[in-house]
Structures are given as C-alpha cells and as structure tokens.
Image (cartoon, rainbow, N blue to C red; front, side, top):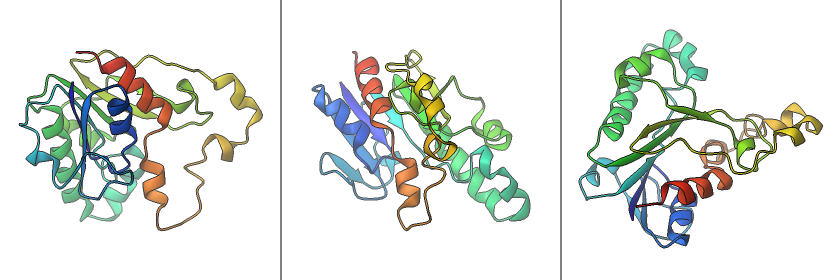
Length: 197
C-alpha cells in the first residue's frame, strides 16, 4: 500500500507500516526524529498523490476539549481554532479511500466546523501500555481499531502519576513532542489492522 502519515515527525507510525513492506511517508513541518521517508512541509501539498491510506495527527492545541476555556479568555485563539479545524476538515474530506485521523477529545466548536464527532475512542492500555490517555479516531473506509493487549487490570497497582505519565511530565522544551508521540502498541495495531489492501 501507499501510505501517508500526515503531521507526524516522530516516524513511529511510518516505520510500523514500512516494517510490513508498505511504502510509507511521514509528513510534518518539522524534520523527522527517526531517519526515513519524510516530507518536511505542508501536508496539503501531498494530498492528491494517489495514496491508498492516510493516518493523520493534526495539531490539537486549539481543538481539544481540555483547552476550550482558553478560547474564552484569549479571543485571538478563536482564529487559530478555526484554522486548525479547517485543516482537520481538509484532511478528513481528502480524496483518499482510507483515512484515520487521531486527536484528543474535541470541543464542540471544532466539531461544529468539522461537521462530526469521532468514530472511536481508544486508550493506550488497550494496546499494551499501562497508561490513560483518551484518543479519538475519525475513520473513513476503515474499521474500528481492535484492542491487541488489554493491560487495564495491571493498572490498579499504579499511581495516578504513573497511569497518566504524559500529563505529569515536568516542564521541558520537548514536553509537547513527547506527549504527542503515538504509542508504539497503537502504531503497530494500525499497521497490522489497516495495512490491508
């Protein structure tokens, strides 16, 4: 398959598809963290290149429900939210037969612009990572992602800080990058389950 991993600089999802023999390219405004097929630039420049599948991770800063209160305290964020929602909508409505778009739980203002809510909500603990981080998937032409390694029962022994490790990361220059990297178990499930022609 010809697979576009949109808005991914980490290379984690891209490399899972490559490992299964697919032609996979990541694309982001940032350079890739892991050397490989990567286009540094605006993903909209690649959308018409005859892809079989796109998995996209568009920026969530102005779309996620956890940050909705900032819209009401900083009026300048409304325009940024609209721009982010339009990018999301462009990706979702692109002419690619199979699409999955990943984002956190979204607020109602972004959903109104995009035109619909998510198709699925997944957690890292469904894919072998004993952590909580609700992740929503918008799907087109793809089935829901099936859990591969449910470790929820092991989480009772972990503290809240361990269960939500990414939320409790200390401030750092790379905190946002660490928090936005796809869990390897989820990336593997995407490649194995959606990497079928």
